[in-house]
Image 1 (cartoon, rainbow, N blue to C red):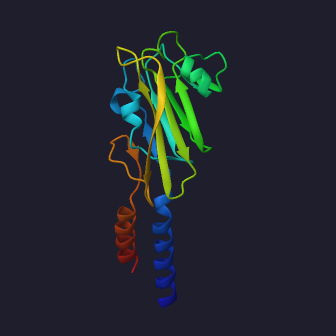
Image 2: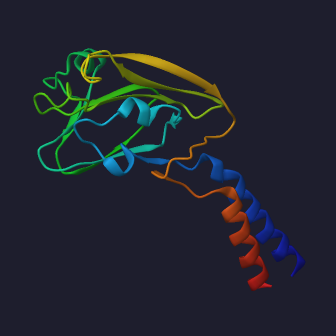
Image 3: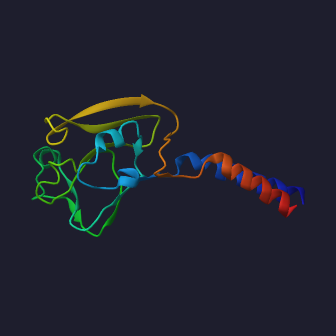
Length: 182
């Protein structure tokens, strides 16, 4: 009986230690979604994107989510898109580190602000986010990336668009389960 209690406790501790590495799901633009006039520079600022996280784009018909290369991002060109979707709800798993670029491929929409650049880290202790900063008179249009770097041992984000289970919640559930089982 003592051995089984120790085994259950060890299992709960192992699960709790693994939780800080659980992927984060970011809803691009939060409740505003992917739309013309969105400020995706501000939205992405301060977020720590790591391999394994996902971006969810929610948008009305008449828009697309195109992943493009840096040159196409800067020129708002979707002719050589890496991927494109127009389903209204696009989930992009961030599988590789580096900067990823997204635009709406509908003519005029990228210039209207529907563009996002995120720098994805490999999940180790240092992370940074690259976001476009607008330079046109309307606050939209062409953009040049700027980088903000922070160093931390875990990911943190206060945005309501983030889905994650905290280690404290699992510890509490583990403790309650342990008490109920014994």
